[in-house]
Image 1 (tube, rainbow, N blue to C red):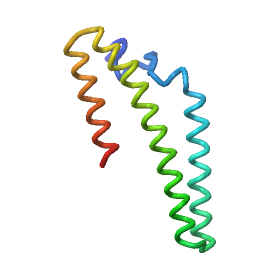
Image 2 (spheres, one colour):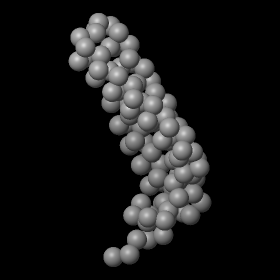
Image 3 (tube, helix red, strand yellow):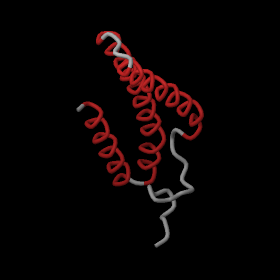
Length: 105
């Protein structure tokens, strides 16, 4: 079965974050390093509050990535779908709402 152009399955589809992909990858690699640092702190029996401070920093960094991706999704995918049809727009709004609900859990 062939992917429908513009669909989730379309490997040639451009995503809203595509123009900022390098920046997102750089931020995620930095977060990855922070998480490794937290694991090292646990291995070295560091003080609990110091570890929790680092966990909080990682959570904040991931939150910033999430908000950025959400903004890109709304600005690119939701708006694009709404320009196609009301139904497509409503579907993308529901998708974004569901993503927001997952982030808030």
